[in-house]
Image (cartoon, rainbow, N blue to C red; front, top):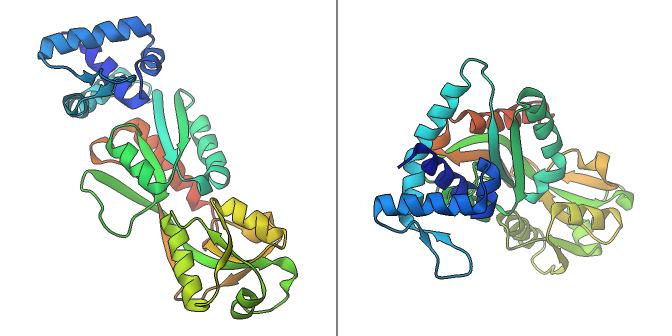
Length: 292
């Protein structure tokens, strides 16, 4: 068995397909398939379930890749120790609300500090991203940290606590939230997400009889509708929203609900230099923001 076979297996699990792995390691898809076959012959067990249209990794494949990933990273680090360069490709997951607000400074930081590191960014909700991270499909993710149920297999790095705020059209003067929720349509942030359920719970306490007029899938969509005068809402304070949208922001007070934005990776990857580059780029980018 050749060491390169393990590199190829790791690439397949990281990239999600034989074709993408072939591009990542600089081989043809047929060469990747041949290496996997040789590795399966060496182990005497299949590494992929080929019964469906798409070959899916078996538990053995995931276990093997996880066990050898540290060794692969150590070899990669040794190759570049002289220059200190961070080289390679990583897959980063982020929730939608971070795409426009935080990814520009984060990716700019990486481009300037690590020109040999390429990043593939994918979007999902926090639960989806956590599942993908645990499955080895992501190298790291920036998401809403769950309040409970954290896994010891993951390493968390808190970035920012975002309080929820009440938002209303800018022309509503000084009217309080308790009045605005009775005179305007309620725009509900997606209740399939934890943040949306938090907002819905707050509305129920504020005005039990109020029902949502529209439910929207993103914070950006909610802000756009509020800016257009279509209603009011409660959302996480994702940035200087009064500067980017024609809305009025009303504090919910010292007892306002909040959500924790964090960077997370597998604990086994916490000292991986590529993952550390992602984490540190987020930390530096958030450090430049005004406190909420």
